[in-house]
Structure formats: structure tokens, C-alpha cells
Length: 108
Image (cartoon, rainbow, N blue to C red):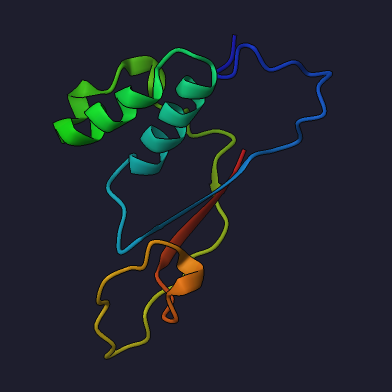
């Protein structure tokens, strides 16, 4: 039984594309974010639990079944600030920010 146990091979779902923008990423951070989103989609977590997990700032707060496995996830694209430019603040939407940031596009 895989991470997406309710996913049917007969469904039309080919992949999910998720985009994460940040100045940097912590070890397994993207796997935790993807896993938490899938858990909400499968009703194993409620949306308010995501806010609680973020507020806890503790990796041990994440239930073990909410970390996406590494297979099926891959880094598609990374952008960096140009040398000498200060990173500044990221806008709420990457399209509103004229300077590139680190972006992780995940295909599953």
C-alpha cells in the first residue's frame, strides 16, 4: 500500500505539480509539506492542523505518516538571486516579485 493508498491506477490523475518558493529549504521540508497537504486531501489531517504544525516549529510534531516518501518527488527547477543582489523579502506571489527566488517544482 503506497503513500496515496486511495489513488486508483484507473483514475486520470497523471501527476501533481506543486511549487514552493523560499529563500532556502530545510532537510526534508518539501517532503513534509507535500505529505501534510496529501494528508489534508485524504482527511487524515484537518486544515487547522497545518497551522498548528507550523506554529509548533518542531519536526517531531509531524505524524510519521505525513512525510512523503522520496520516490515520485523530484526537483524540477531552481532559481537564484543574481550575485551581489540582496534577497530582500519575498512577495506573497512569485509573480509579484521581479527578482528570482529559490523555487522547487515537485512532480509526483
